[in-house]
Structure formats: C-alpha cells, structure tokens
Length: 100
Image 1 (tube, rainbow, N blue to C red):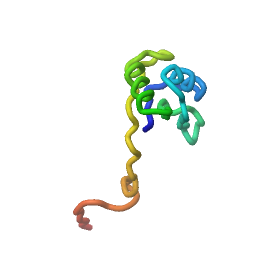
Image 2 (cartoon, rainbow, N blue to C red):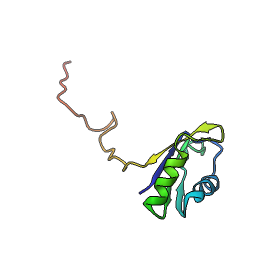
Image 3 (cartoon, rainbow, N blue to C red):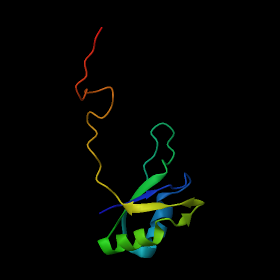
Image 4 (cartoon, rainbow, N blue to C red):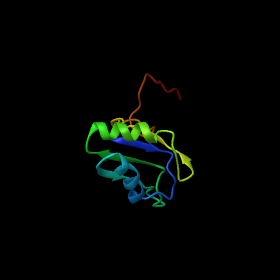
C-alpha cells in the first residue's frame, strides 16, 4: 500500500515528508514527482510505510491537517490507471463519423 499526499507546499522536500511520516512508523520510501520543464515539486507525493497499520495511523492523523501553510489531503493511493489511448492525439474512441 502507498499513501497519497496532496496539496503539498512547493517548498517541501523528501526529507520533510520523511520526518513527518516517521512519527507514525517506519518510512520505506518517499516520492515527490517534479515538473519535467521547471524541476519544481508538483504539489503532491507518495509515502510507503512498513505496515498497513502505520499507514492508516498516518492517514487518520494527517488528512486535513495544516502543514507548511496548506491543508493536506492524505489517503490511500489508488493504482495508476492505464493511460493508453486517453489523449486526443492517439486512438479515437466511440462512433464518430466525419463528413467533408
């Protein structure tokens, strides 16, 4: 299981997240996705902890909590969806007809 943390400050570091979540158990991994063009943190992240019990304790304590000037959104991360064909530039879905 992994924890999703949303509405993060753009100033947050992996070390910051690690220290906050370590209060609820052993942190295995922290991920902070960054924008490809700017290199800036995107405002959300993921934390994996050693057990489901520790992760649930962190979710219960931190969801809605104010940290670094923002109200955190903390919940179980959902599996990443397969994005193939979801862009408009790729496959066409549905019954569309073109008339020229």
